[in-house]
Image (cartoon, rainbow, N blue to C red; front, side, top):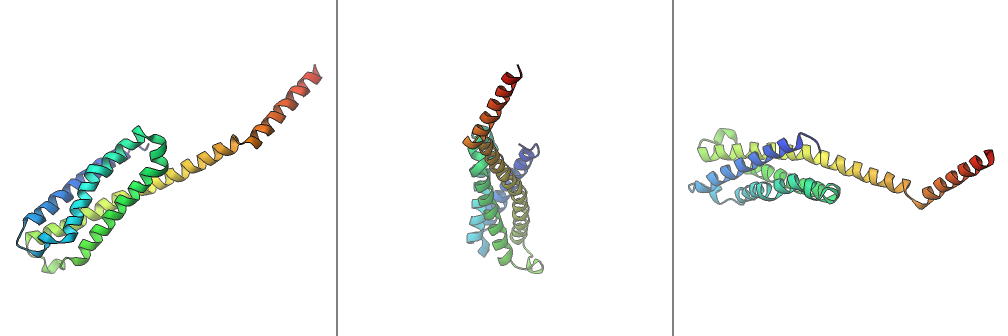
Length: 172
């Protein structure tokens, strides 16, 4: 495992907690239409999903289930979580008012939420990339290992060993 993955997971957890805090602030401000927006609840879900499910699994699965997690589950969890963050911050960015029309603190919290969501998505792009590279390498190593241990290779190795033994006996 790469040494910088766990510190990046801590950063992802902090960004998720910041998302939960910003969305909670937005929901608590009952004086605007954003307090009841589905996008805000979606971003709250992203923060809770990442903090409660994705980060613990992505941090503990390589230790508890090393073979299965690297081959299938970690890349899928990375892609799913990255896709959730991408769709969340883009949906929020497409619907808030322009920066010039944003004059109240609730709107500034939305802008901060977009930035946090975009940074969170970028961190998952980085970890996605390495999860997919790890998946390709593990598949290639497994294929090479199977090729070396195939019956044809074993028979070829036995013939070489037999010939070498017969040559050694003839030389004596």
